[in-house]
Image 1 (tube, rainbow, N blue to C red):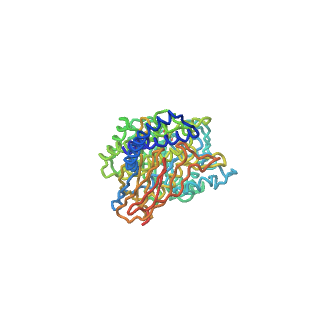
Image 2 (tube, protein in one colour):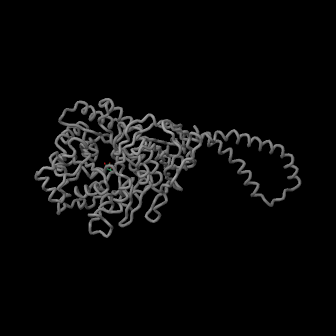
Image 3 (cartoon, rainbow, N blue to C red):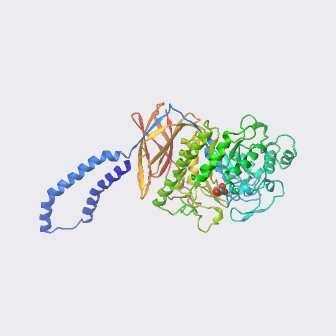
Length: 568
Ligand code: AHR
């Protein structure tokens, strides 16, 4: 609504500009006497027209002010905790996600610690990655953990992703070392599709046992006497598709056995920090998926001591239609508007599945874990299509912010999310090419959102207005606020509109906010990207608010993501 008014008023404002241009372009032109007479006769008319224009502009001025957005934050009404696991990452044995992206081997000339790239580790430490999901993805349901331990690795093929050689050089110990180096936690997906309960149960014993079992000794002999911590356990991946094409009933029977027998023995995880088990959940909104959620959650309601789940996974990519055909760079406002419109469907999808979960689990014990999400576009020309290589633009930064805000608004149920994928695959944080590394616009969003990890949701109300382009209408503004662990009030505001800046008035109840400062992320174009050659096109810049009475005023650039903290 606000957009319509503002848009109209702008076209009115444009007329005098055109008039002035016309005059200046005619400079030097000497009018004939008849033309002069005509112009004298027209003068009163022109004068009247000019006055009308002035009046319309004067009336329009307050309407332009409607482009302003008033944001009311009530810090006295805290909501759910925004779980740090909403900022989880996903690393699959796919393309250069692991090999080259994380693992270069200790003989590499690329600086590394025990084979793991130092530059990547430093970058990931800065975004406080809460957990990394590994080894897949589809890859997980064909993965056999013994292939990746000990001095002699089993070399296989990777049929899911390009049919390339999988050297298994990066296995359990290397993954856990990586997790340790970046200060994160392990989210391990076990093979429910082609593996056995026995195999998965042995893997967990190998990783977590503290007593002198044969598997514990084998782990110690392989270099790690102390038990590893496994924070999250994925009971299969997309078992309705690449994970085995199972019916929900068949999956449920199988999953119950994995839930019971695949045990965590780490003494440090017995009372607190217990391993959370995540069952396979839906991959969309159609009946097939609602049936899946119904089946698993109905069984959960009846569950006995012998099996349990703590989360239900959900996968949802922003793709518009399969196969992914939208470009990841070299696109215009049409694709910008369409992709962002599509990504907002995440909200309805969460609502739909949350409603089913609420029926069977009103206390919200089972988390909805969106452990694969992000923009999925056409592979970059010249890349192996099985490697899912795409660029990452300012549009992806905005897409990430919109989704994180959706998750935060559902923080009572959505307590985990893993963007796909961390390095070199799909909507990545980091791109590498041999020794080169570049941080993507999405990386910077994750960096800006660090204060929201384990913060407490605070309600924000605002009239977003609309951004319209062709057939697509989206909220012009999105916003989210939270009380951080540092005690500060943090606010995120996204200006989706790529053409118009926004003036945001922050009204805060519950604290006496005197100033606000933080960072804003924008770039010249909707498809601006960071490259190895020009890495700083889309990087955050400082921003601060000006105080106006009891309000704080923030000027947001078009197509921008802004995070500020309020000072009392
Ligand atoms: O992230 C790429 C793939 O997408 C994953 O392997 C699979 O789970 C999903 O279909």
